[in-house]
Amino acid sequence: MRFGIPLYGDSAALHDSIVGIPGAFSETVGGLLNLAANQSFIELRVVVQKRNLHRLGKIVSFVGRNLPFVGRIAFMAMEPQGWARAAWLDLWPDPMDYHEELIDAAETAERMAIPLLLYNYQLCVLPTSLRRLARCSISDWKNVFIKECSPCPSRSRCAGFFQSQNKPEHISKGVTPLSAAATRP
Image 1 (cartoon, helix red, strand yellow):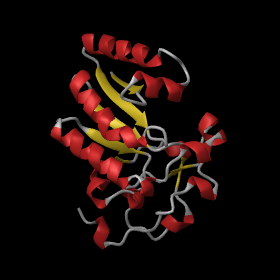
Image 2 (image 1 turned 60 degrees about the vertical axis):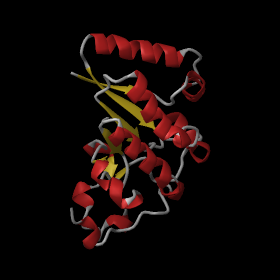
Image 3 (image 1 turned 90 degrees about the vertical axis):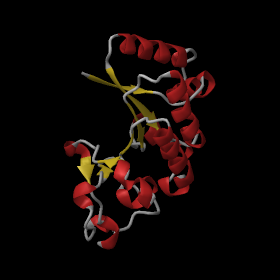
């Protein structure tokens, strides 16, 4: 059995402010320790948003130093649903604007031997060096591709979009078909 547990920051102040519940960070860490005691596979899931994107490398470092039993970390691009949809422009960072943070986090994860994956990201909005970490992670029943993706030779390896990403402000400015040369392993 695998457990996907959300963690939004490397401190109580950040995590608790994002989830809006004082003490949530302590409860989450306590739950992680309980799962570790039962030798459960843990995937920490970090939904990247404007409030935590500058801490991605620090979050990875925190996990490596304090939660070495974590099986992997997944950075997840936001889906415009629920509270996120209502506050989209305040929360959502365009992935094109935080390449440096993603690269730093990936390099930190590699140094600390923590597997890192990227969920819900279109390949074309990621730095070339990180595309190998991207996974087709959106459930089939809510996965779509927009018209700009039609000529892209990487569609079969790309996460695509959530059906809920149906407004121009939900789409990265970097969405463009990858060239055939860019899709080679």
